[in-house]
Length: 81
View 1 (cartoon, rainbow, N blue to C red):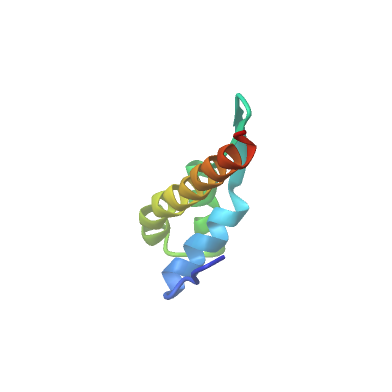
View 2 (tube, one colour; view 1 turned 90 degrees about the vertical axis):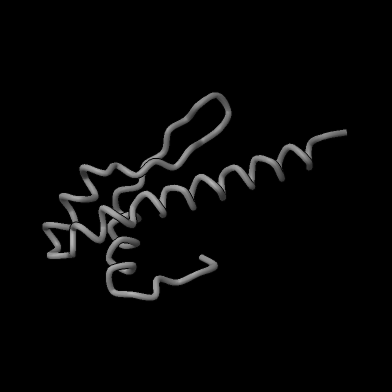
């Protein structure tokens, strides 16, 4: 991880995001997906701020998708003749 959560809410969202992460395979690409329902139920169970988690989860998912896209571009550049 290149950046750390800077607030308790960010830390809570990151913890919930890690635990609710799953992967979808589309063609040869594996995409990270956060199950929002599971994440919010987990946040509530753990006593976390569910509103903050709900607001931060999309940003986590965008960051994960950006990393996947970056790796896909890098992989395609490595395999080009």
